[in-house]
Length: 442
Image (cartoon, rainbow, N blue to C red; front, side, top):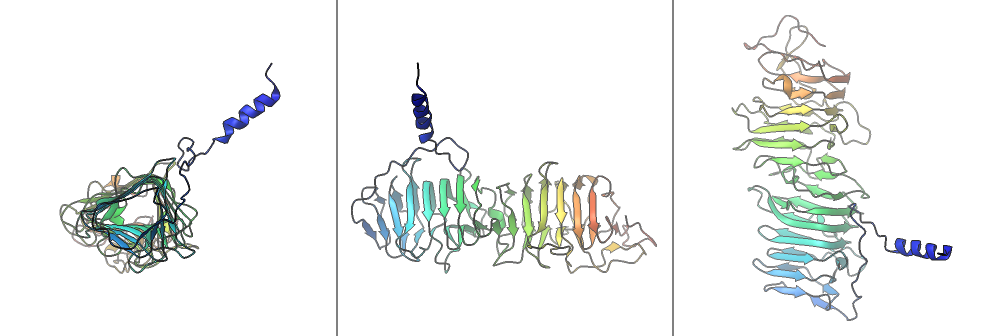
């Protein structure tokens, strides 16, 4: 007969190895790395020839900022420990490979109580991190914005130069990760955990969003992916997808006012937004999603495909702590809407700031408009399929503004309008540019 004591011991033994991972995978094995026994190895000069930092020579002490030169590879072994001094950083113009394993991770830590600077890569250099933890960086913002950063050619399509797999960035004194000027994650990046950042988990330019990996981006001062719409960040050189990553995308931040532009280049650039994504625009008259801004081109150079679902709508809203109607401008489609443009199961909240335009649509009394305040504005003839099953709420102006010369489109049927101060859908001018004596204002 099996004793109760034996059963209890067996149950306890079965529980003792239970270490669930943060990304929903199987139980993580315990750390098998031995503690360093020596005084460590000092690194204070640029790396101009291939070099390996071993676990046996740990800890590796970075006492001044160093650089991995072009064409040179720095390899950091599993179980190696790297400790960086205050504001010191590692720049990579060549290649950095720091690939640990689940039971033999690599760590980057501060040498003392002060935060270290950053690890960054400049294209065409590359960084590959696996089972690595970077703790306490982000202390020097003169050349970078985060503990881990990628930068590329701002005039070229996104360059996938940063690979992360099962990587943690913890307790950054600024942002956790920064992508700018063309530097992007690789398509096979996955399982990134950023927490404890004094700012937000990540800072990117709009065109670098596509390969943001799955992971965890909460428990930071601001739990949002900050999208800085600064110079050379427009979606013009390639198609871009915003994936749902568990936190909102804040459009605009410390460096920009939130003017998000799609199109304007030499090709059709499409912004695709996945179901469940929330885009929160900073408050102000410059906060707008502009698709083919002011374009009269045929065909259009920008397109927006935002197809949510009933259970996972796509939300465009204000980032203000106490949001109100008119916090941001809204969505604006240029003079040549593309057939791909679609808003389906989309919600637009708190829009209606003044876009500094007037005279494009007709008022109910036959006059032309004094302003074009609206949640969504079309400055070219749209089709009925472009806005379906969507909601417009708390708007300081119209719900959908038909600001063009052409025929009206019934966007009232099938969509929901709540607390919209103007017409649900405005009336366009006729093809001759005239307004009727009276026009409906549903």
